[in-house]
Image (cartoon, rainbow, N blue to C red; front, side, top):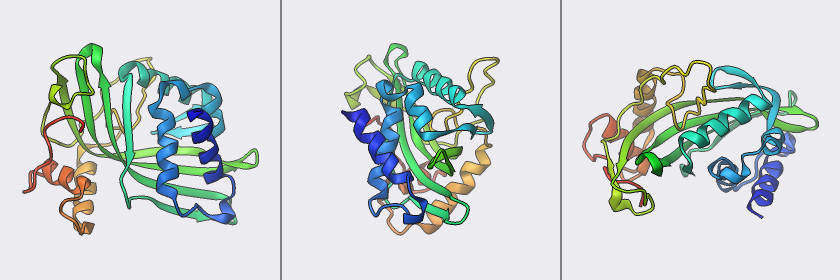
Length: 238
């Protein structure tokens, strides 16, 4: 049922560029990201429904199978994942004549591997470039700029209990390590993506400059990473 719902929602979101995105874009994008947070819905069929035949995926040109293998590799690294679209962060730019659309969101995320007693959490931008293929809009480009990241240790495998989390202060992600011939899995929400920490610093500065509420979760994260007053949390998920 979950697979049917999130697939239907994203198809409705992307099917007709002329109609624009629905008013409840945040909720529908949240349902879309829920696809990749659930191990059961990461399948070749679901990938083919949402991605073009060739995709610029975080700096690599991949086939649909390559995108699928990257996502499966990510599941191996982090079996449990939680994604949340930052309220008010969705922006879109659609070209009605060219049948293209670009959507950018700020995504809050948590990733957990109980067997290693490890977790990580933070926020990143995610940009989806869409183009019409086979009659529907599909993702032909996906990129991201990581904002902040915190590395966590678990006292025991029960990751649901926030008291078991011990996390570092939020900071700027470093460049991802090389992976040899393995899938890179350069999903911005987990490896930091192929960008320098300075890019994250500039993006966070822009977030703070545009912020109008000091209690906004993303503002707290950026202030913590920049070591400004109003530090971010050091515990795990609530």
